Length: 241
Image: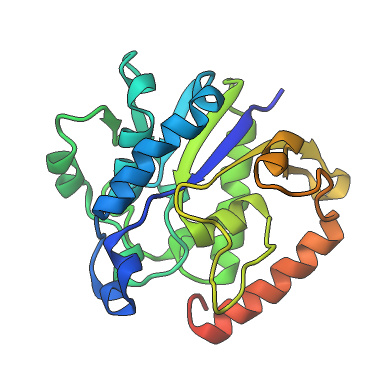
């Protein structure tokens, strides 16, 4: 049976303070972002106790969020696995990662596994390109990989825009707000057989209740409709192509 996937958006980054900061390469967390990450464990520690695999986008802010939020889990010898499939959607400097050598130096003394972040992972071409075709393919590949994992529960830390692609949860993703995911927000999903659409992620009733929502989420048809609208809006805004 595929695992339950607990998805988290990173804490506030320096680039979130101003549009001018979007030109900063691979920015770090702010002091508030660090506090948000620590508070995540306090708020939802029980949800994460069963996590057997911890994944994070290899950008600095997502790795740091995972290290701070899951410190108690990592004390047991586990590591944060940096997985390029989870990197952010756009090719802005703030959404483009650092090369492996820099990450190895910065996180040398931390429980981070950079094996999957091969040299050149940060180059925004091919499947990592910031266009709708590549992003949809990357999200589909990520879901397929996650569905094959032997663990019962997986937690991952990614980015607001890419989490919409990964989960196909597009409610609230507009040009003005970009993403409905709040910093360090947690949403949990199970894989469901969608017939001709294959396996897809469906938010658990418990997760929707945590967010104050009805246990019934939009149908697949509605989700795909919202996806098409969001992607076209993001293309018009220049976020992706």
